[in-house]
Image (tube, rainbow, N blue to C red; front, side, top):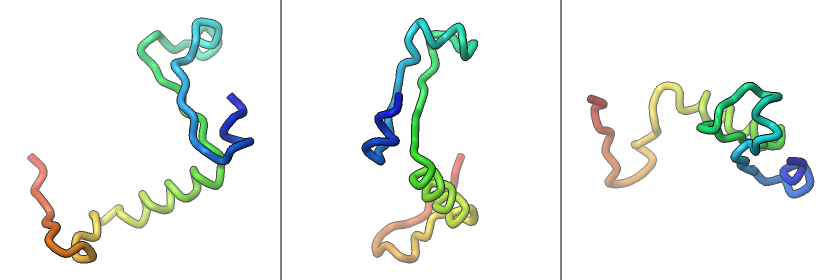
Length: 67
């Protein structure tokens, strides 16, 4: 699972049977590897949108009330 660190991309894994006992996860879990730079950008985006998506920047877009 070192591919993301060589490519700079994100990688997903179904956590094969050899990894499941080590992680104590069941067969219904998905693993995600992400380089720190991409993780940092993702966190920045989540923090920047904490008060809501900036709909005012996109013409024609409207915010919907969550139900």
